[in-house]
Amino acid sequence: MKLFDVYSLLDMEPVRGEGAYLWDKNGVEYLDFYGGHAVISIGHTHPHYVAKISEQLSKIGFYSNAVINSLQVELAEKLGPLTGYPDYELFLCNSGAEANENAVKLASFTTGRTRVLAMHGAFHGRTSMAVALSDNPAIQAPVNKTENVTFINLNDVEALQRELSSEEYAAVIIEPIQGVGGIRMASTEFLHAAREACDKTGTLLIMDEVQSGYGRSGKFFAHQWAGVKADIVSMAKGIANGFPVGAIIISPEIPAKKGMLGTTFGGSHLACAAAIAVADVVKAENLVENARVMGEKIVEGIKGTSGIKEIRGSGLMIGVDLSVPQADFRRVLREKHHIMTGLSGQYTLRLLPPLVIGEREVERFVEAFRATAAEMGM
View 1 (tube, helix red, strand yellow):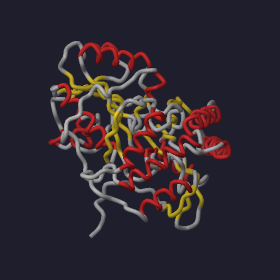
View 2 (cartoon, helix red, strand yellow; view 1 turned 135 degrees about the vertical axis):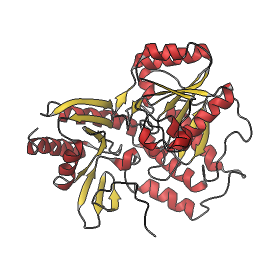
View 3 (tube, one colour; view 1 turned 180 degrees about the vertical axis):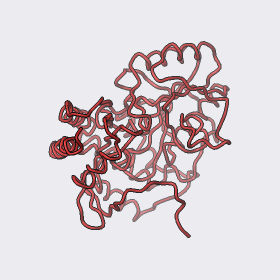
View 4 (cartoon, one colour; view 1 turned 90 degrees about the vertical axis):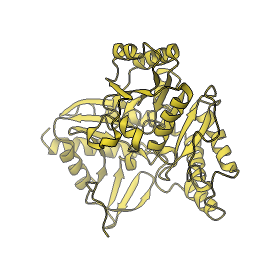
């Protein structure tokens, strides 16, 4: 048997990590400015994280949601003040796609409606409804296509108000910062217009914070920069630093009914231990503020480099539009300067480092970025 060939793999195999650093099987050290696609929030092999998971695994790793699991309650209590949504309720699952799937299903249950308003450039995951909500024909199988989803342009307030002029939509789903879509940011005006239109029509406002959440933007959730409140917020990636955990937090005004949502593996003892450890570290090490400060330093450091067309983003979720293909730029950064970065489209470099990076890592990146630009004749 061999692996199903669905990924284009880099010629690099990491075998060890610590903080913001990786080492490959040949012992070469890399600075991780990709964070495993925004998943590594508190750094690789953080001691508190390793200890919490190891301790829990020595007790019990899993039992089903048919029994009491006090770790779920502990996690919910920790997330209340951290998220700024202390009165919301927590549902745990396994991934961002599942979180979005359950968020939309819950909205449909609650409103009795079938339609969802989504954004061009959006990516919400690879399960059935999440794919239907994603503006990417390459990942939509025929079975995923549905007339129940309408797409509008991000930040088109007029189109938003036109679509939400009647009570036919169950939900609007928005990434406050589109990740796969190129680090495109929802404007404050657009998010406020969405909240107002949803309130008028009884539509639920879902914020997809799978990539932009958990402190990455310099606020716990990126939509909080606009001062709006969502009815449902989905999250995953950074919530457990690499252990597969997804979640939605749900307004107390949305009634729960037994059996409307469910999961086998979601919220297991081991998953909760991992997520609790991350919550502990995010709070103790002030990582949300660190993301804001370090993000500003990165932008300031690379700003003005020849060949940059635009820099977008917030905190440690940064997109840099280049005058050369990002694949070539990334290759030089990785092979010559040993720095891992991400991509979005043909020309956008995506920076998603662990939230624990400090000035030393920022300085190394800025120096390498500028050197790479010079080497490529940008």
